[in-house]
Image 1 (cartoon, rainbow, N blue to C red):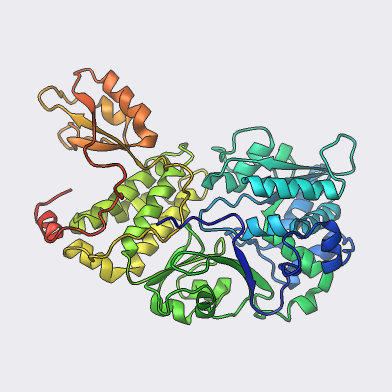
Image 2 (image 1 turned 180 degrees about the vertical axis):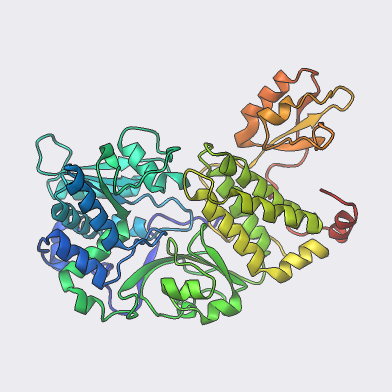
Amino acid sequence: MNASLPDVPEVRVVGLPLLTSGFDLVERLDLAMHLKVHGPLEPMAGEPLARLAEQIALRGRGGAGFPFDRKLRAVADAAIRRGVRPVVVVNGSEDEPACRKDTVLINRAPHLILDGALLAAEALGARTLVIGVTRDSTEASMRTALAERGLGDRRGSALRARVQRNPVRMVTGESSALVRSADGGPPLPPGRKARTSEYGVGGAPTLLSNAETFAQLAVAARIGADRYCRTGLREEPGTVLLTLAGAVTRPMVVEVPTGVPLRYVLQLAGAPVLPQGVLTGGYHGKWLDGVTANEAVISRAGLEACGGALGAGAVLPIGEGTCPLGESLRVAHWLASESAGQCGPCYLGLPAAARGLADVLQGGGPTALEALREVTRTVKRRGACKHPDGSAAFLESTIAAFTDDLAAHVLGDGCGRPVAGVLPLQAEAPPAQAPSGRKLAVDWTLCQGHGLCADIVPELIQLGPDGFPSVAEAAVPRYSEARASRAVRRCPALALRIEEDPTPVTRPALPTALPPGRGRRALGSGRQ
C-alpha cells in the first residue's frame, strides 16, 4: 500500500476560514487576489507587535510551541545590545512524510506568510529575509511571490529576500540546520548548540519561526486581537492547520478552531469510527489509544492533557485491521535513516532502537523489551538537535499506547494482524535503513576476537563478554554498506565476509504475521 501524500492535498475548513480564506476562489492567491481577500496590512512597531502575539497566545506551529512574543523580544534585545541588524527566517522545511500544512500554505497562500515575516522584519529593523524550503513546489511558489512583490537578493536593497532550498530530510528542518545552510554550510545541525535569537544567520540575532506562525501573525495584525480571540478557546485562541492521513478515506489539510473534538476532525477525513490508535503531532509525536482519542480536543494543552501532542499538526489514525507495532516499526526505521550521522546516540542509537522493536515483535520476549526501553532512555538529550529526543518519545509512546498488542508479541504468538503500511513514508527512493540484500557473516573458524569490526560497524556488530562478535550474521542496511565492506577488508584474521542475503529485500522489515508458536519458542530460548 502506498500511503504517500501529494504536496497539496484536499483542503477543508471547519467554521470560518482565517488562514485558508480565498481557497474556495482560486488555487493560488497571487498578490492581487491576496489583497482582495485579506486587504492591506499596516506596519507595526516592535513592542505593539510583541503585545499582539502575547494577547493571542501565539506559539510556534512547527512543533516546539515556543511563545512567539518572547522570541521576538529576545531578538530585539540582542540586536540592540550588540548593535547589529537582526535577520528574519521563515522555516518552510516541512520534511515529515505525514505533514503538508505548511506546504499547502506556501503553495496556495504565500503572501500571507510573507506578510507576517515582513511585518516582523520591519518591526525589528531587519534587512535580510530568508525563506527555507525543501520541495520543488514550495520553492517555485515562494520565488514567484517574492517576484510579485519586487523583492530579491540585490545588494543595496532596503530588504534582501531570498529562498534557501535544502534537501528533503528530517534534520534539515531543524532551526540550526537551516541557519547553517543559509550561511553556505551543509544543511545539518552543528555540533555546538547556540540560541538563534543571539547568534543566527551570519552571526546576527535571528527571528526564526515556522511558516504557519508568520501567517497567523499576519491574520491577527489585520483583524486585531479581540476579533482573533473570538475564535477557538480562550487560552489558545484562533485556528490550527492539521494534516490528516493514515487510515482515512480522504487525506486532507484542514483548518479548525481550537477546542473542536478530535473525533469530529477524524470523521471529516473518513477515519474509522473507533480507530485502534491515533498518532498526534507527527513522527516526533505521541500515540493516543482509540478511546482516549474519542475524548480529546484539538489544542496544545488539550492533547497534552490526554497524552498526545499537537507537534507538527499531523493526525494519523490506524484501523483495527493492522498491527500498530508493525506500523510503528516502519516509522522507527525511517527515523533511524533520517539521522544526520553526526552524533553517536542518534546515529547508533536510533538504528539500535528500530532493531530492538523488531526483536520485540519477532518474539524476543521481556529481555528484548527491556533492551528497547534502555536504548530509548540513553539516546535522549544527547544529540546536536531534537531528532533523537523526538524519535525516542515516539517509541516510548508506542510501547505505552498498545499494551495489549505488546503483550501478545512479548508473551505470545503475536497479534496476528498484517502491517498494511497506512502511515505515510517517502516513496521516491528506498530509505537508507532498508535492507540492501546483503549480510555480514563471521567465520568462527578464523575469528580471533580482534574486535576491529565492532569499531568500524558498531551499528551491526557488538562484542560479547568474551570479546568475540555477539552475532554470526547481520543484515546490512543500505547506509552501512560502505562501512561493512571496509570491515571485511580490514579484518586481520580474514574472518568476515559479505554474502547475498537469501531473504527477499522486498519483504517488509516485519513479517505480516508471526508463525504460530514462534514467540513462545523465542521467549523460552533465552534469546538476547
